[in-house]
Image 1 (spheres, rainbow, N blue to C red):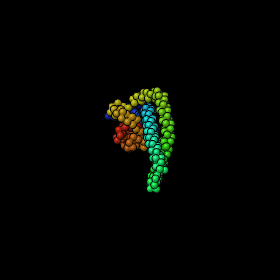
Image 2: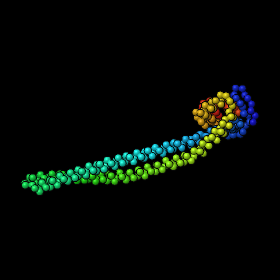
Image 3: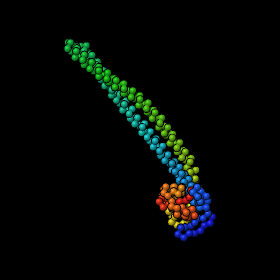
Length: 256
């Protein structure tokens, strides 16, 4: 590869290789390799960050499952209270019926007899309605208790999932850290291909802001970063080994 200086444009890399878009300079090939490293680094960083996020998500699911269990227990408690209140009312109605039955038996006239008989019928109807409501309340207790068992099983499963996720994250952490360190070292070497000056400064700013988006390939004369057409003049300069940035998105360009 022959490297020469061009006034105002940094370095030219004038060796060429054949690509899908025609001839690519050694600089384009090197930038393409650097871009692949940046993409791999971004993927490794995402995988590394996914670990803590997965743990946090699993812990939130546990907290949600715990809240569902607590809510279900509160429903059961309230339903039992309702059933107890209904049973107390039933006992009161039964006592009233017993008293009225005694008064009916002791009636001294047909008028008294009819009065007590009517009262017994009315209270008997109320008691029957209370019995139905109390029965429904007891059924509701059975249903909510069955639901509680399901929720408790779900909570147990969520807690086990948290432990599994933590174990997996801990097991993968060292490997991901080593991968990130290795990729960073390769990137540091590969970045030396970028000529010093404003282009390198712009690349570094873009890498801080966009990671692998600091560079973009040119496919069918379009920047793959922003889908804007690269001018013919810029294409020629890039193919002759000059480091240029996209006029729209400012990414460093290379021929794919």
